[in-house]
Image (tube, rainbow, N blue to C red):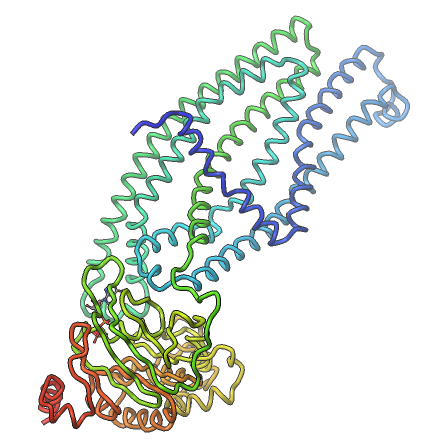
Length: 615
Ligand SMILES: Nc1ncnc2c1ncn2[C@@H]1O[C@H](COP(=O)(O)OP(=O)(O)OP(=O)(O)O)[C@@H](O)[C@H]1O
């Protein structure tokens, strides 16, 4: 696939399109530090040409003084009374310049360090804040995971793009000043140097673009490697890995993925090495050619010895500066590609939004929640997870959903909380469609515990407070919720009580049993004053006594509030006001425990199957 060179050039420089946006971000982090960094770098940028020019003046002055009679007496006498006043001034200035240069470079690293840290934090925050606004559907797509993986590199702080871009600007100012100085002596020499560097510039740009293409193509492999590394070295997985003896298997998988990535990188690195060596040689030949011409012109009296010092010094610097500029531009070009990914991620917009004008959630619920002919397919699949579903949850009613694995129970919860949008039909609360409600308001009125609830590596009290994060400091509310959710007994056993960090990841963290974690999760639901409570497998890990306790307390909480309980345990299910049996995303039968048993359908069959297991 061959593109015209103009298109290629546009694409190469196109990577910098987001740099102004990045600068705006940097500016917002700290205008004072940004201005300080720019000013300090300007001061630093003009020092090398000044130092070189002072050097030339000193050499010329020394040669001029060389013709005079040798000073008599001491160095001090010569310095004070001799004809060396101008020389002394130049030397003093050069000394001052060295001190200044040292001070500014220290100040630059201080200011840049502070600014960079703020910028990296701002990038991480932007990623987290934006992630919170995206749809669950977007998160479940592997394309988004790949984009996020690349965008994260921007936040990792490894690439230090900010400092590199500032360095480029500084180097450019120095190079321009040196070039201007040299141009006054011999304009064509500068042209020779620039032209000699062009092949290297093109080569670097080419290899950087190729490197990025490689990384992009291998994002999925890198994500897999990241996953394998995590699984292979985390405490959560250690137990199963040991017992199943999976260490070797994981290492093998990782090595295979790593070897594929490594091999491609190696080939690119070798080609890059060979080509950049050849291009660098062209630059060096040009530099020495120019140097020989300057020496020749000095010998022939066209330049003074001071001019020779200045020109050869300037050329050496210019050569070094142009090379580092080239390296800087190409390195930042490849990093700027991640900037592209970072902003592409920030520009993603969620599809599930609040309407411009929203209706309030009907609180308290008077008529109930209704699914009307609802159909839903997960994105990227052809199979209907739910189809033609009609379901009613009356005000103050507890409905239990039962059905075999994959029947669509959890999907109903996702639709009810608008984590996903139905493809067909609608869901209403007291006749108001979920689409017409403000998303945050809708979710604030629903308390949900999913079967795969999160075990936060936070303190016990924080783990409960996440159910209503505004009440993080409301110890009385947290204690009451812990009591309702049976977590008070769990807390009593913890040495640090409410303040006990949970999980193995944190210092002094205590691990809990599955049932104990579930009690903490149930307590979260009690933190909310929810009009609709959804419990997806709430008691699967609880012992029989705890299960009874949980449902007794739930009955008390449910006064005037609707609840949807999903469970495979019939001891839980039979307490519900109404039981809905799902099959292939549709309602198969519905009624009370007694009605369904009398009906002798699927429910009765499943119930008897489970009851037989206890006999
Ligand atoms: N994120 C997803 N993407 C694609 N398909 C999905 C996704 N989540 C669930 N499904 C599919 O949708 C169907 C319904 O899944 P759902 O999780 O609602 O079942 P469930 O009744 O809750 O099952 P279980 O009793 O095992 O928890 C299943 O066939 C499942 O494979």
